[in-house]
Image (cartoon, rainbow, N blue to C red; front, top):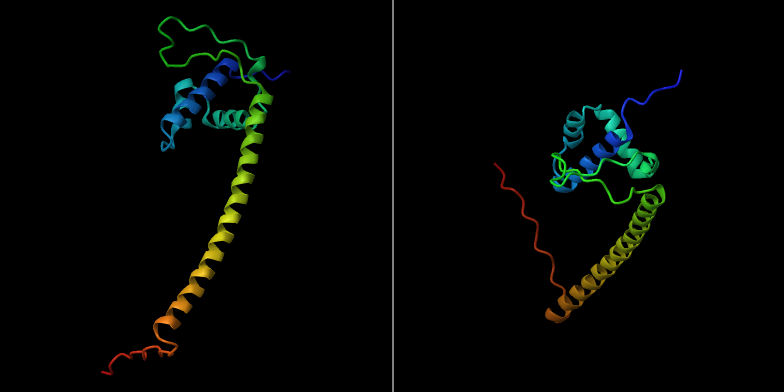
Length: 151
């Protein structure tokens, strides 16, 4: 017996799009997936799986039937169909670009950390020289440690 899909591709696409839109509009809201799942009457875990597959490019909407054209006033839920569906290669390219950008930023962080260490050394050396110059070469002992009075 062939497994029948419980949800159609259009429902999947619309639900994923709604989550993506709401995440942009409400980045601090942690219940978006649950709310959208209730709205579209799908399981939250199914929606999470669709989002994961969409993000990594393994779910291709090219095979999905084109959503119905929006009426003049648009859909009541604010969803408008895309001009052209996004294919795996387009999403994959975005992922590769993000990975390259992450690599560049990690390299930049390493360079800045090394610069920070170098500047710290230079400031320490300058402080030592300033201390010697202002005291005329006389070594000033550290103040004695204060002890708590005995009771």
